[in-house]
Length: 171
Image 1 (cartoon, helix red, strand yellow):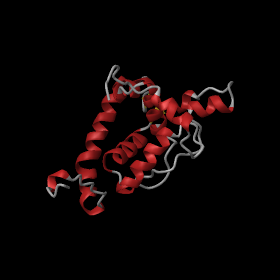
Image 2: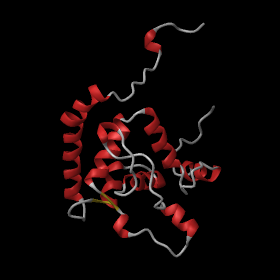
Image 3: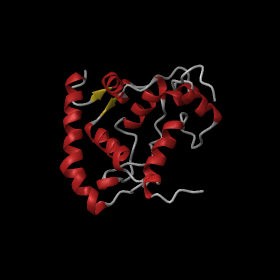
Image 4: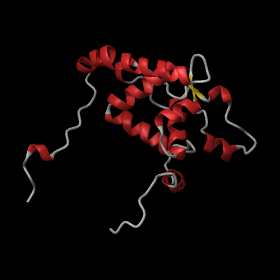
């Protein structure tokens, strides 16, 4: 028998410009700007958050943190999102994984190893209150390690190999 109790259902609310724009401008942006300033004081770059500071803040395992940093780099997102921010499709700049596949002599440019305030705000706003399509696209881009437009078994293997699992669990 299926439960009819309304508390048993998950309600996902999409972005509503009329309601959320005041929240974004009055609460979320000021909070994220303060957070960016705090991280900036820890960073080795005067105007941007360096990769080490970003990774120490997010504290995600291995390549998951590296992929998140890649998604936040200043040049990655171009299309509009909540509150009029530009975001969406990644540029064709290659991830460290794709660079390795394409040319083993290439290194990720140190110029690209930072997060600007604009990108920091846009990406966290997308993560926190972006609509479902934006969150799905963001997640897809996180798992599409070689940026070929497909999530292949190899992309999944790479991501899964860095996820912590409890050992000796009986299923």
